Every structure is written in C-alpha cells, then in structure tokens.
Image 1: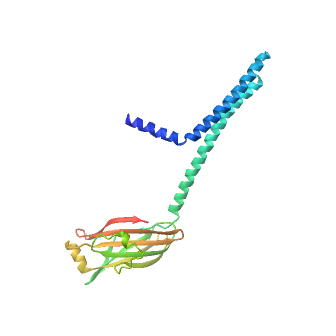
Image 2: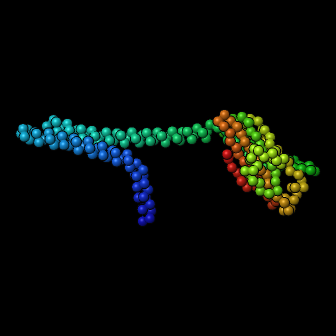
Image 3: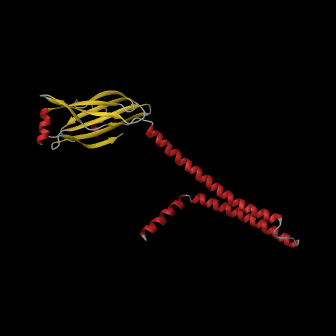
Length: 237
C-alpha cells in the first residue's frame, strides 16, 4: 500500500510539474471544440428549417475541423516532447564533451620502493594521463609528516612551508606515464615500523590544459604490518 501511494505521489508530481502546459492545451482545445460545435449546431438548425439533410457539407466540414483541432493538439504535444528530448540530449552531449575531451591525470599504482642506502629509502609513484587530451604541465606538491595532514592548508598556494616541496613534471601526453621520486629517512621509517611514530605522505598533482586546470590529490600512511603505504584519502579537483 505504501509503495502504491508513493508511486501515485510521484506520478502526481510529474503531472503538476507541467500543469500550466497541460491546462493551456486543455482550455484551448475546449474553446475551439465548443466554438466549432456551436457552428455545427447552428448549421444543423438552419438545415432543418430548410428541410435539408442535417449532415450537409458544412456540418461534415465542421466535424473535420474538430478532428483537426485534436490532431493539432497531438502535434503540439509531440513537438514539445521532441524539444524536451533534444534539450536533455544537449545536456548529455555537453557533459560527455567536458568529461571526454580533457586530460585525466592520476596514479597508476601505489608507492614503489626503488632502492635504499644507509640513510634513506627512495620511493616512486607513477602518474599517467588516462584522458584523450594532453596536459601542458603537471606540478607536484609533496610533503611527509608524522600526523594526518590538513589538505586545505597544504594546498594553500600562499603557504611557503619548507616541508612542502614542489616539482614540475612537464607535459603529459595521453597514455603517457611519468614517475615522481620521494625519499624517507631510515630512522623515521624505523620508528613508523616500530609503532612509535607515523609516516603520512601528502601528494597533489596539479595539471594544466587548454580548458583550464584540474588536480588529483591523495594522503597515504605507512602500514607497519605490511610495510606498504595505504591510501587514506583521495580526491579530484
């Protein structure tokens, strides 16, 4: 019963959404039909007074006019439906164009350990352009902290903190990959594995293209059980 009531309410909302159009069409068709009916009745009375066939050519013509009114109403409804469908199609086409014809830069995998020495470990992350349009320049912002970073403060361009490093990777063509390197001190890594500290990596890729600019960011944490970095937060601007 509740489902039926909700269905009826939904249908009623759809009808009320176009109540002015439906009302206008109904009033127009009613007035035209009434006018033609009056003319037909007058013609019938006149024909009866003249002892002629009530279904004269004039009466038949008026009935055809009544049918024409209903056909016109149907054509108007079809045209209105067609215009509405074309408007929705235009919205979808615009959305597809905005999504398709632009670069989409994002990570192709996680952090990979390249090598280590007595002082630090070298990691890399691969960024790939998954879109069909080249990115004219990719700018990387990266920082390593002991606590969960605040992405808004680190994305502030006026913040000149020394812990925040920026590097330009240059252009990135469709399907092209580039690696970004980062280094972690062995002492800091050891404390994170022992559980006495944490390692968070904030990394943000800002990429420019002909239509504007966009970005991909993520915050990852070193898991001391697997010795791998786990993505805690990811977002697209």
